[in-house]
Length: 158
Image 1 (tube, helix red, strand yellow):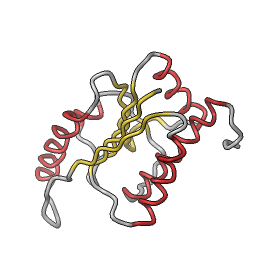
Image 2 (image 1 turned 120 degrees about the horizontal axis):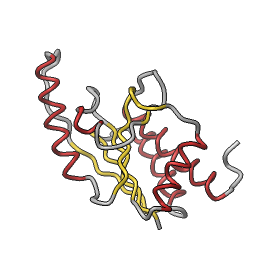
Image 3 (image 1 turned 60 degrees about the horizontal axis):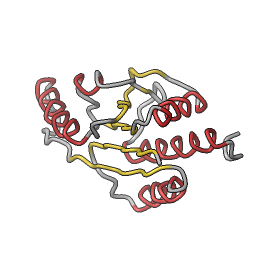
Image 4 (image 1 turned 60 degrees about the vertical axis):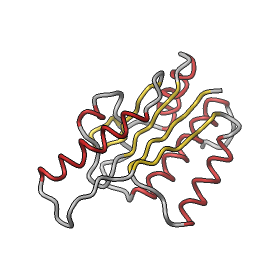
């Protein structure tokens, strides 16, 4: 069974979002072994300077890199990434599974991801829009579930 790892800088506090993620985790159990690793965001002042943001991103990057599985295909999730259809997203996951690799999606903090993380794999963007971390994580889990239903030929995807 393919292993999927979601590394997220920041946590989910709201029970509604946690509940939605939990529901997709249950559904995904039929297709993959999925895990979430939460990294504590680096502390920054209320109105950080560019240098303070850069320092925070660098610190977060070190923590993220330490948690990436060694055999993983890495997908940093950032606005500069490629946009793709759900079918193309499914092909990315299926390709990794067929190669015997685990898949690692990385969600950055409110300041994004350090360039070092962005260079680790294929960058993916869900939109030119910015989403709250908690909502984006639900969206990612839904798209991972949708990808597996596409791969397996189930009727969930329309």
